[in-house]
Length: 382
Image (cartoon, rainbow, N blue to C red; front, top):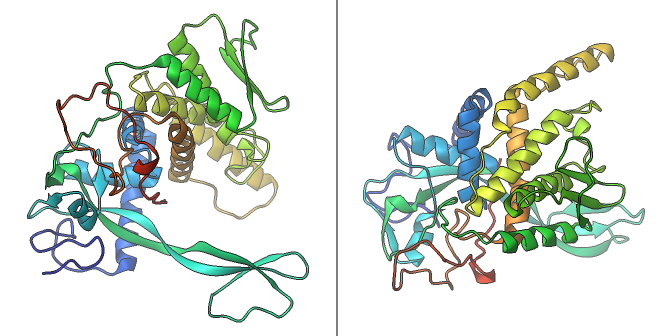
């Protein structure tokens, strides 16, 4: 049997986890969404499960948080180790590896996209129209834009489900030598990209070891800490920079102006943990034990506000909040790791031009991170 599509499995390789029966794309998305909700329910109830998701995100940082949760859930159901490097059937073939006969595909949620014409209307507003639709005579064409029109299930396979050309697949946290000074420099570069200056100072704000001043665009890190502690604090503050600026407003994340500072700390600490983990620094995920408590506080505050305002909208659930937090944390983490460039692939196989075959020694120590040509296609997700 020939592959069903670009990344479809060939004979002996199963696209369905438990059955050979075909299901519709709509049913596939419904099943994946239900599975994602179940995984998030477990994660928000159990600090251990939340930390497991963050650990997986450190390895699969090029994937969305929702797809990381889906991959972990599916491999866990099969009683196998978590995923480390995944790709479609034909992508593996292009890299000299073959999906083992009888293997079942893993499924992620990928966007359906369409190319649209972007127009500027006479009133200054921008409008998107299909390429085959005539533009109004008074509109100015700006160019083409790719837009998400829906979602689809995409079949992928972990490297453990394949055989062929050897690949070095270092996992997050396995690096034996961590260049803390180099990591500090790369995190400083992230701050500069967002127009924030870094001050290492002996001034202390309350009992904190770091502080982000959005008004002055400055990050303060305590000078009394050792280099690794400073890196951890800087990563935490970068979580605030990427997620909690005035334009975002933590208090507006879930539909109100309530100041959810506790949830902001969970997000920033989760970002710091994942970034450090990807670079081989393992610090306890202290944020994990607080997620459920702060989620409940947000839900209660939302209910009170809506009751006072006679608002009939349904309040956010624990799963809604967990999905939001995980998505925001993994998006911020990707923004940082794209600059700091940890060893490994980030969960996505290298571009076809790159060659990461084992040469002299199959050691993970000293394996350089992927360069520009290693950037695989970014797959957005839930």
